[in-house]
Image (tube, rainbow, N blue to C red; front, side, top):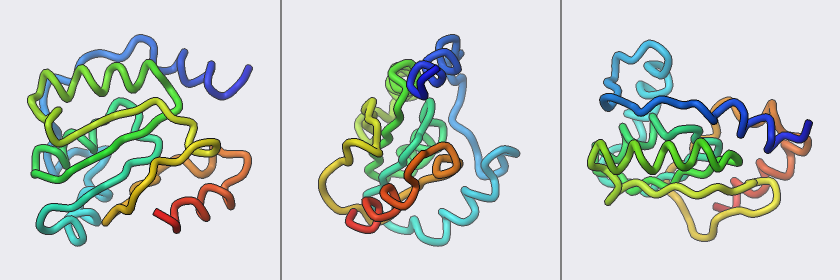
Length: 133
């Protein structure tokens, strides 16, 4: 089974996010602690492999300009709906993108690539792309 199909299946039955996470969220608390050191003021942030956008929605609520990309169209659909429902869609945008084949343009203050590299066939290529952004 190809990678995209696998992630479409994984994300097909995602439930709507009911609230925006807090700094004490068990799953992401360490990442959020680290981000809080660097995400001061308004930052332009790229999240590669954003999934359903929980971290991006949190960062958008803080006023950051966030662009989340994921290989799964189902995940991106859920992320967009959650951002709209939680009223952060002005700060947070999402796209279904295979980052290995196509990278966004522009420069970012912070790039998140959490729990992604180990799933890629050519992680060196992705790291090189990240360095250019």
